[in-house]
Image (cartoon, rainbow over all chains, first blue to last red; front, side, top):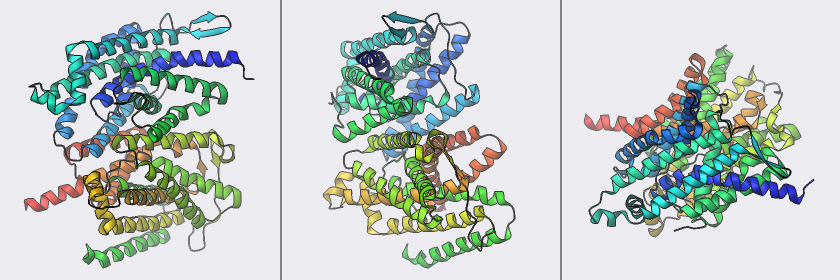
Length: 290
Length: 314
């Protein structure tokens, strides 16, 4: 029943899936890992991006192109969300933890129900040339859609890692995460840098949403599963570590794929949350923790 | 606070009395069917507030405790046909143990990490029960109600009165915790855990206690659910919406006082019932989300906070 071939296939799928998970988590890695914003609404924003891609796809746009076109819009959306969060919670300072969490939880709900009201609870998908085809290697069939998502995911992750470590603003974002008061003393405005960083994180999430709908059909409550996946990746990675995000994505992807092959689909949702609980219990600072 | 002691117990007795009176006079079954849900949400909100409101640990995992309680009942009904009182007690014990575990997690996890861990609990328990054949797996299990105990003419009415008693128990416990040294300790943890620890507050002991009590009450609230619906399945039992309502109610009512979750849950749950019946089920979830955001942003201390401000203005 279980053979080496099956295991190899599971691992290959796991790698593809893992890079995809890394890419959908990278926005959260910036927002939560670097900026310490309890952004539980991240998966919901991503699903929103997927639905925007769906709408553009209906107009004849290619999903990847749509995802890229959505990035500036989501960048502005992210800036607005952060500004609001800052003005109402961070600035007041008191009890920001509980209320901030509740705020993002409420935001999740509003996006979710908004999507249900607009599109219904049915699953939606997009059409493109590469969706539905598959690449044949020996006996294995690898769906093109996973390969495309894999390609975009790798590019996106590499680009963001490069941006954060090489450009001026990118380094400023990292600096804000390390020592905010110091940055303030140097005459920079940490709030503006954080606002831009949150915008970038949200913009990246739009493209992640486009990949989400390329990889499989999307429904409004999909974000609930991804709360587990994205937070598992970010926490396992160690807050804010980009290399760690890729490694953690791969670990999650491979373990999910193996569990799927061995025990069946009904156990798969518990993998990410189980992994998350184990990491939180044993090594809360993650693999590449600060 | 002490001087209200007698008033509180008289109020509680009146509430139970009114519920019983209604059970024998009002004929419309739907009143009890809807009322049960409102009462249940009061228990859940009050239980949530013991940990979330007093100690400041956000628990999204209400459905895990609630669902474990419900499934404890299912197992007891299927195996030995246990009566309702035994179901409730056993569910409280099981969910209390889960709370004990969650409480030990707070040793290392704070803020958002604790919150995310509680979401994980929900999904893990849902997956477990989806894959457990004995309780019906993903398709769920249908249950038959036994005849109601003598003074009651229908099972729904009996459950309504039982839930009223549970409300009184939950609120009395929350009130006792709030006014005793435990509540003061929990508030100290909320304001600054380090400072509390340094001033000799036994933080871990208090957090574990709060988690256990909170979990046990949520489990007790879930225990009558299988008999209420006569049907249980994992997806709706472990639905995160319970968690959201349990969190939103105290936020709306006010988290500092035991009365806050009672007011919040009564308003929110009644509104939800009305919206579900008159508009749609989706709108009912939206109402919770919008109210939660509005209150958290505009009235951080909830309705009780607004009243206080009004008093001071006069």
